[in-house]
Length: 132
Ligand code: C2G
Image (cartoon, rainbow, N blue to C red; front, side, top):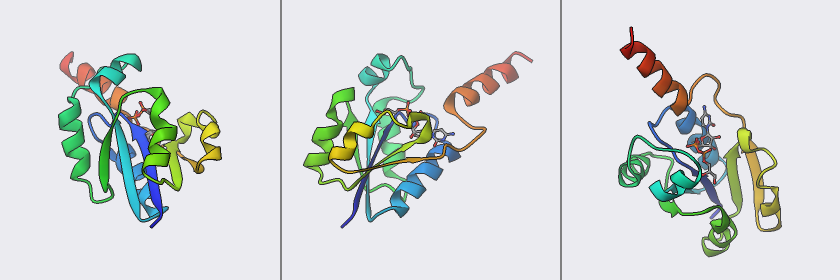
């Protein structure tokens, strides 16, 4: 069984997230998503609209996702890859090159981001609409 892993906040779920989850699953048979905890988001300088529990429940409802685990820090990736016998690590190409050190443990693939959508843009557009 070919196992894939990817990491992220996945707040205000949108088609950019769905595209990368679908494409990641297409690379193998089993997709693990490590979703950033609220505490780790603070370390990343992000404040998610939805709590960790809500974001986890939403991801678990997606047909492409087989397992959701917490992402607590930057350092856990190697341990996760070993613990779950991961074959492929996948991230959007805004991260291109940043995780190449994982090539010692599994295949590393950066997939093109979906253009024109992001959680930040959704929040900005909603704020603009409010101020009209
Ligand atoms: N993504 C995408 N297209 C978009 C928006 C996001 O392909 N339009 C991808 C990102 O490249 C990432 C995933 O969706 O692979 C999740 O994006 P975020 O929730 O923004 O995750 P991020 O803050 O990049 O956290 O340790 C890694 C970090 O946890 C990644």
